Image (tube, rainbow, N blue to C red; front, side):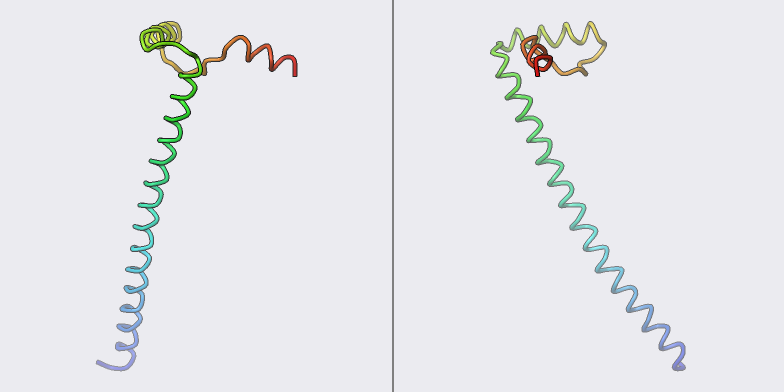
Length: 92
């Protein structure tokens, strides 16, 4: 092999090694994102549970409330706001 071809082969090998390192970093980054998304979901679930518990209603009442909201709106999409919270917002 002549020097020009050798140099090109070396450059190819160097770039392939860079590619391998970048792929490993990408894989690690994707794993980190997956872990963070799971933590986010856990935090959201904890917030929902806390909000539901703050309503001081039982499981049957909650199920009924969700069914009525779903029947009324077609889906549960709007946050539940107690009347007292709305009055407090207007007073501020």
